[in-house]
Length: 208
Image (tube, rainbow, N blue to C red):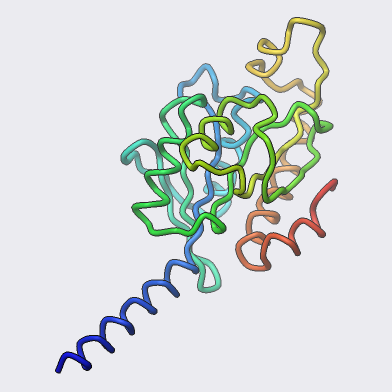
């Protein structure tokens, strides 16, 4: 009897582990509130909102953020928009990773990057926070800099001392014209990350 129960426990544990490997936490960083909606700093929210719009998904407010679930080709995408404001994003990321039993290698953080030209994309598996307060808090809460991050370029076209105004400023008319194509490409990157893996996705999309 005890051997039977032990084997059953091992089997259930293995199934749970297999299920967890099929779940991915996709986190878009941003600030809540209408005044931040169309700002450069909120590109993480914007990409997830665009993904949801294309797939007829809806977000539901839950603990520490708005969530939506998307199932595709045997994988489960859990989209998270933290409602903790940018500087405290790590709390929401940590909570949902633990709650959903998602391994850190299945985590993808979407964020803006001043060091990349507008619209360019770069996927990395580790790195510094680069002065980004959201990434800094995630690194602090996870106690690791080894997590996947999708950096979306917003360029550094601001004058000296105007960085904050630029990051929290809205897209220009020209940028808004280009954004839909870049958002489509972002969706492709996210799907590739989940289905093809991080290394293949980096080879395909980095610098594009």
